[in-house]
Image (tube, rainbow, N blue to C red; front, side):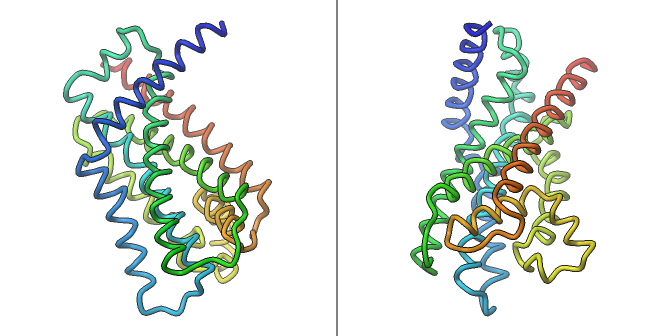
Length: 249
């Protein structure tokens, strides 16, 4: 059983490496993973009096959120169009290995873009102190969780990445406004604070604040538990939806 798992992991890593080489510079990935979060950040921060200790975590949280969740919705529909997605499963490669490989590619993309945002933010705004352990958690856990979220949405049966990006953005954009990115959680109405707790982006931002010298609203153990929960949930739902769509075909 362990040998089988190891072989599946190798196949997942090979798929991730291929996606990294092929899809990182595709227009949907660049637009929604790089340009959009930076543009959104500038739109809501220029001309506003926002303290530097909020700006850098805000920038990094946005970039890891958008970048990590943009590769799966780009690669899977395009591979359906070219009929390469089905070839994985006749290789044979399990569906789980395929989805994990694609999620790893998205997570690496999110990590890379968020590191660019982190360096740019620290250079421009600075930070009082850095907690390396919390910062590492705040980059790794959200990148994997948001990448799996993109994989889940990529189960929509289409050959056009835009058909996946549109419903995905109907979720991503509202999450930006209830997760403490633009409005601090303590300033939200009580109902919105409950909604903020249910958002994985809230907990990504919360950990990043600690990693960059700030304080946590919910506590790091709660942040980690929620992000791990969502990673597992998105993985399970992604497998379920992809299998159902394959059975219909």
